[in-house]
Length: 117
Image (cartoon, one colour):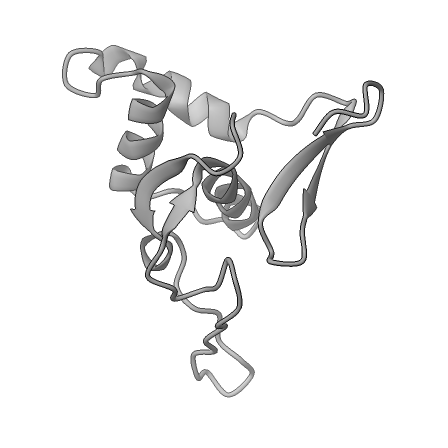
């Protein structure tokens, strides 16, 4: 996946703002911020979805449809292939790749063997 491609989902559609111990919403305002109005990149969406699944949360239907479209699956004509988008979100990174975040909290991937990112 190319860093910076937009998935078309608002950051606020992917995960709600985290709550502190008092139950109040916390808003972050830096670069990949929660509650920001910008669209998520594909890498940000995949990373957040994986973190949400670790907490037992599943992507919403609009999120899954947007990701399927990014992968080239038309949810209307290729509805029987929607499992591919779901499996892609569940698939672990290959062993030689690691996930990292830059200073603006953007996600990128690094290959320890080829030193590519």
